[in-house]
Image (cartoon, rainbow, N blue to C red; front, side):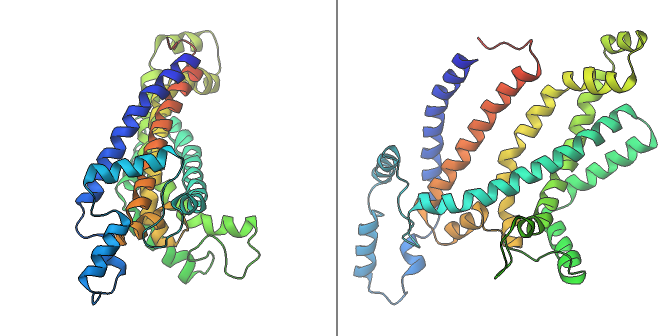
Length: 316
């Protein structure tokens, strides 16, 4: 396992390098430039050109990328074009709230989708199965921004049970309970999307396993149905379930951009939107780098969990 992880990490290096090149190229293709975003339109052209030269925007594409890569190899992510703050500091401030939001939604989705999917598979072709499968389609097709606005209107504006946005109440004590109250609405929206998609995956995986001969043998030997379903069948159905839930982590980080905007959650999503609107190249490159690392790390973690879930899997 150790050698497998080491090989995967070595293979990930050129992949990560290629991702940064593509991201840098796509960012440079965007119309406009950062100087035009925060300089007065009446500024003389020579001052605008001087500003571009100072930021290195007049250099060829590969020169700019090489300078950025040298900074990265030195452990630096550069400075924001819009705020002039260190990009590493900006991401460090925002990554915590985003991870809290994403993993809370993933855990909530797992706790709901797993038992519902198992129940639907055990009761397949019954009214309960049709009802739960129908709900999963509703959760999958419902736009997250529409659900977010609906929950915000109902629970925050009409009923006044939950806060409208942010991570903590202004001038509040900033305690754990206050953060949990602010988490409920955005986590609920993201969790509904996860639950809607994952119920069908869990159901399909369990149905494949429940028809296997070794489970019929276990029932014939007198093993209780609960043990047959949750001990023998579930463990053998875990491999595809681990895959789909593992790949939900990058999807949640990307999907939280809209949710963070709606609920004013101070995370990576808000920083991404601000960087796009201000053409903040260093911050965008750092955010894309973080997203690529998360995807590659998630893929590696899924492979490791495969071996833990099924001892028959050996990596050589």
